[in-house]
Image (cartoon, rainbow, N blue to C red; front, side, top):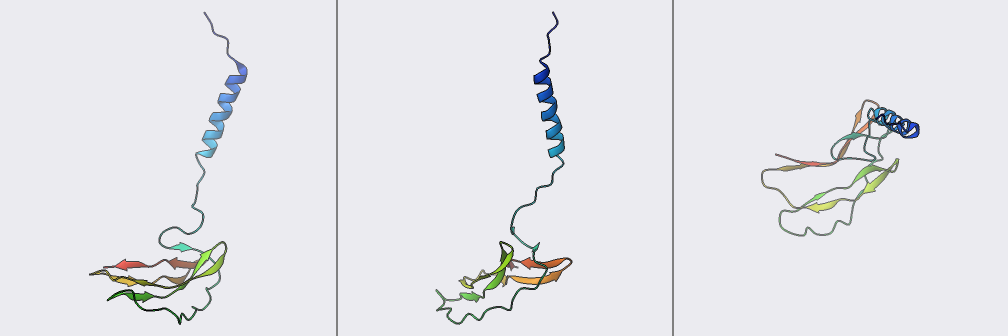
Amino acid sequence: MLKRFNTRRVALTLASLAAAATLSACVVEPVGPGPGAYVGPVYAPPEPRAELDIGVAPGPGYFWSGGYWGWYGGRYVWRPGHWMAPRRGYRWERPHWERGPGGWRFDDGHWRR
């Protein structure tokens, strides 16, 4: 016995397959900064702010990691510094900006062995 095709169902299935094939070629990039370096603004960050009231280290060996200009919402935003505990065998590399092709590259800071 031959089954009759529901033309509406066939058309819907074909449209769904075409949409899936089209969308499978899309590239999705994260919004905003992700971990590590990324290319942000095309103009340089402002000069760092002087942080005068940093308080007292919370414990022996703690060190001050100064603030920096982050890139959020299409503009530079000041991120204040903070005290950090040392890690034996590592050295802290502060967050910093570097000029790169087409904009400024940001390194959000990391521990280096």
